Image (tube, rainbow, N blue to C red):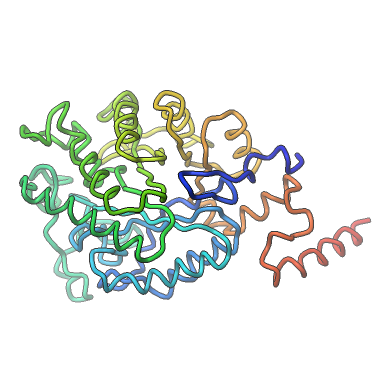
Length: 380
């Protein structure tokens, strides 16, 4: 397919930001930050590889708005001004390569204070404290634990929620100081905002509970962030469009919320699925190629807002077909990008969008063009 027909490599404008292509690296936790939430040298290499690989937009992993909002002791944070310089170095490098960078601001709620998945994914205990990862008090909409054998969270009071909303706003201001181009609010996957949205985890009876109140925290966070985030910069919201198959938060709920968030200044819904319960077992969506694309399609068409699609999108032609069918505005790559950080560069070759490697970093492209000629000649 010639480049002029490939939507994957058409630019995309969101507010005043123009992305050079429709490829986004999805937020993926690395659990490699310093114990004070500062970016590590690893982050420069990790995110830098995606910039060299040609992605239009690179999102950070979940970045906590307060220390107790970390998923693990190794999470990035933006709850302190002291955390800005280390992550700004990463942002600056990404910009030097021509890509844009976004930050995903998050709070883990009752799923905080845990070990990385390769270390059991269970809650921290005193044995972890000896390694510097001392467990901390988790918080949530109620005092119901994640599971029977997990610690009891502290139910957030009204004043606690107000303080948290302010923390989101302050973190947004720091994200701007760090030079991020896009800010995404993490409202998915059973973390704090998602816990408030879900009827399975939010059984409050005050103004933050019930059919109308469950969306209040999400809206207040958006308002606080938008007030501290420049008007010309895009704001994304990551949403579990469905919590699970026939359980909890529903597609209709998401469409209504997306419409509301659009009026509050959200520009794009980053569409995923799963909550505290619905990511596993009989409630999980079967993992087939592009298994969550239908969710992005529904939000885009019914809420009339820009969206990103993610979930086992692995092949260039598959990604292009999704865009051509107007099911999404952005293709988000997660583990496929870990497997092949140069996926965007290779996809451009598939669509003849960079026949002579001119869009690669010059120090790579010059040699690769010569190599391609040699390979072609050797095959004749």
